[in-house]
Image (cartoon, rainbow, N blue to C red; front, side, top):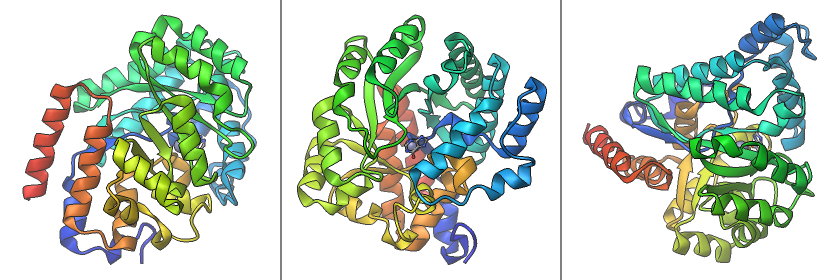
Length: 345
Ligand code: HPA
Ligand code: ZN
């Protein structure tokens, strides 16, 4: 089997996956920073990365858990300094996304990782928005940007970050919550999330990646999110799974991430099919593709091969992502028409 399980797919399923118009709901822009770009930017900015070469950096991508990945991911962010860096990062992601037929994306960025180093919020958001606007012009990829708080920092820092982002709130679609899950529960962020929702933003949060199914339920209660990022552990608890199915809350699963961070022992342990069959609105995404061995297409191929997904399953996954996005209704209709054409062959 190839790196992403491609060889195990029938040619028909592989072709269908290539054709599917994709909506990506769980990708961290900082997690799309490929080592080549990290070194180019670090050199340009006179910043030292804690790796001697691109090859040494890639060799460090042998993770034992979420934290071992986050340590490398935050260290690499030192390369991102100027507004132009954030534009280039975003543009490079969109080139790859276009190659995978991504038609709409709602990426995360972690402002605290940058503002804590003294980078102005306006440079971070401005550069990303420049890149997203270019991607829409060049490829027709629409987007909605999600400001994600770091849960290992205190809720006061999240609050200050939301206040600092005030001038750009109308350019964002949602707030999110990421970083270390163990030892950092959702409840302390309830106030920040309530303020963001009052300000017109939607809410999503990582939960049930390393944490147990109950953390998914607690996140829904505390933060009133419309999507749970990862959420794969929800499949361990029938009550939580039923709650997700009945409420229509979307799960943004990231199969390669789960295997690389040892959330799952192997791809065939992925609960994606179980969740689909239970009526949960699960979707397929790449999370941090520069670190986990592939972009969204590779994630579709890997999970389809390991779980023997059929055409109906794959079309349902793609449709769930359209419906679960924060795109305006007219855009969702366009995406559904593209999906109907792709699924008809
Ligand atoms: N989990 C939590 N935080 C993250 C992740 C993730 O998978 N990727 C980037 N930040
Ligand atoms: Zn994530």
